[in-house]
Length: 127
Image (cartoon, rainbow, N blue to C red; front, side, top):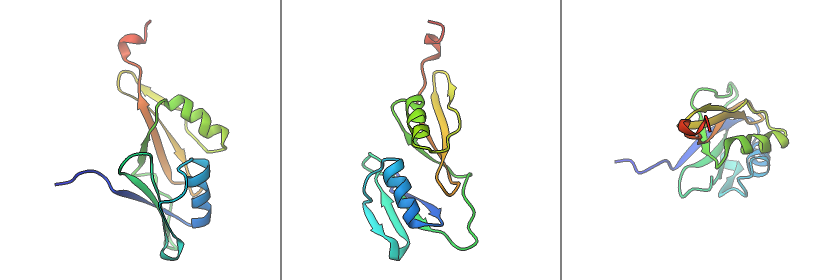
């Protein structure tokens, strides 16, 4: 029935600041759709589907740290260092040997996102 994820929406209190963060600091590039009058800005993530949209939050909105957008990267440690150098708040990477390396990072509004990459195979850890 389902064939993938089309878009995930993240509420933000300031669309202009969100555009700058997601476009420039995260490096997602120019929006696919930039409709601030409709409260919607959508970015591609480098895949054929699974876009990220930022939408204008309601007045009583609070940042999300529950449901989490997880973005694929080639090397979580290298991407962590790059995001930190851009001034983005990041938690330290965690590795589950043989499975995944991931870390959380946060947009300027406090929404938690994550990135992940394959972890080294646990059989190679002792080498």
